[in-house]
Image (cartoon, rainbow, N blue to C red; front, side, top):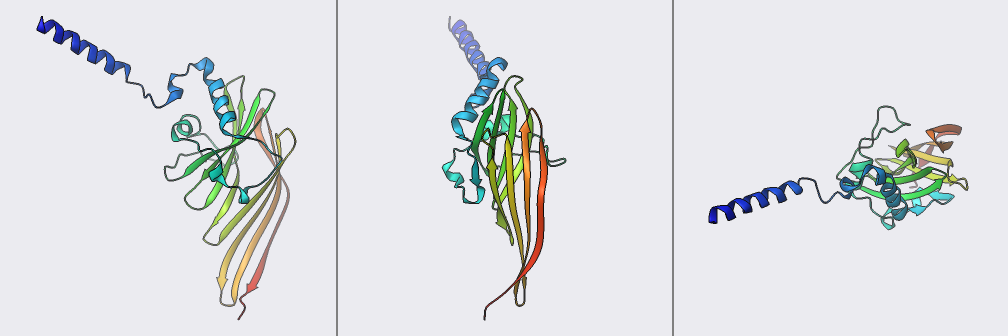
Length: 219
């Protein structure tokens, strides 16, 4: 009788251990393919803000946005090709912080963005186009890198159209170099347009201005 009870106990332990082979912390692992799209869309919309027509990324307080946890990031974004930068991918960095940013929905397309707050000093804004019907990410683009480090600084200003599928983008980049009398400042201002749709996003440079200024130190 004791041997029978011991055998039943071993079988029960083995069976329970087999049921725990899938990670229970990653909720996306339990979602059936037919509902995966709706879960993804729900998470983006419930954690992101509705897309506004104007942003100054430099004045954005990312800590007021909802954090994007590592499980969700690794499941859906890690390893995605960045379409507007050749041979580059979205790579998870354990030393960085990630945040949901904004979204808008146009017909069967969900346009949204998330922010990578890196350890160097930049807020990198990624824009994603997702087709709800086909359950596919159509385009992933790095559209801004606001911040500064080592004499370099960059400011990005966004102006979306009402639907949120077209972006006028103004970027001001500066680089300071010390000289004996003060410092020089190289600058570049780029005005561009991003067009999003059921295709790879389009990028058009409207205007670009570069120059160098010398700033003399006061005695």
